[in-house]
Image 1: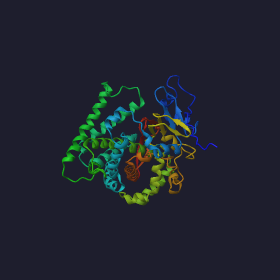
Image 2: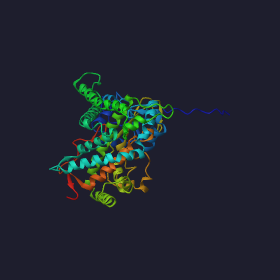
Image 3: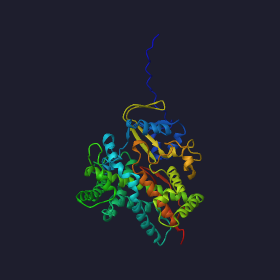
Image 4: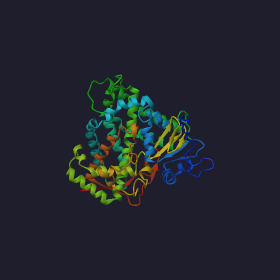
Length: 459
């Protein structure tokens, strides 16, 4: 008898792919034209994983929560972030969003304490003050009709992240930072939409504008970091926390360049996603008046019209459920991409080294197998009892695994405070004749903004 164990046969089959393909660009041609409907269409054809044909890229789409867990958590060391965007790489440097490997792990350890819930609680006053200022601005508008509320939310969240990061030093330059951050976001989106643009090193007019915006941001932020190094004063903001952080093993602290890169990352990633989530939420509340009234009732009952405390937020479960359902329906980070470092196997299929894996968060959040009536706004899905039944990776607006967004608690506290303060004062109604259109680029934007009429709840 031969007792020699037989080695398992290596998997040689690549995932299947849709039959419909452009003669030159392959399946990717249809993805680029209208990505979300295409993801929904093709996801229904395959069981958890499939690939897209292309002459230029090796692409696979993963939409099964268990496979997503494998990539982002169980075998995460084999998958790096797919990041091929000149503008974002230049502006973010080696920040947490773009760095990899041991350097990323070290930076994450250094930055993590700044985002602990206890330390974030100190940022609540900044969030409340900035929101009250934005409310005053909206109250004083002579005509509260046809307001692009997404622009107002962008302004608000940028003011909050600036105040949380730098206390007071950036106030004189907030207009510069606001304008240039918006320009960088638009430029990065343009590159995402047109992969054939020349790299930023070539001096085209568009590339020169991109470099100018990045320089303008550096000219604001670098002096603040240098001056803070020299200061003997006490500061209680994110920059101070990042500067104080020390590696537990070596005692090493962040260099000025590392501080600059993390600061830029927090600015860019820390305001747009929250602003978009709030803008979609106001729209959902207008279209679902029964759920909106239930939210108003909870806010009024808990706060009695006063400024909310963090203890109040803990007594508002429905507000949190509304937030979660809005983030399920319109996740700002709607698409996650990873590249595998070594050959792998997922769902019985071979994934060769160097494949780009696309994880369409939006599609998973709308999968009827995971979410009955997936397009309906039902906050009760996220009640304490119902939330226990969800797969961890059936709902992941902040990503998951070791690379879950470090600012998720900041964003959730910020969103809840803004919701409570805004809805104590206003109702937001979609402007007659306006219908928002999703514009899925780096984030899930609106093609023409979010136009709403603002009504005072107690005029």
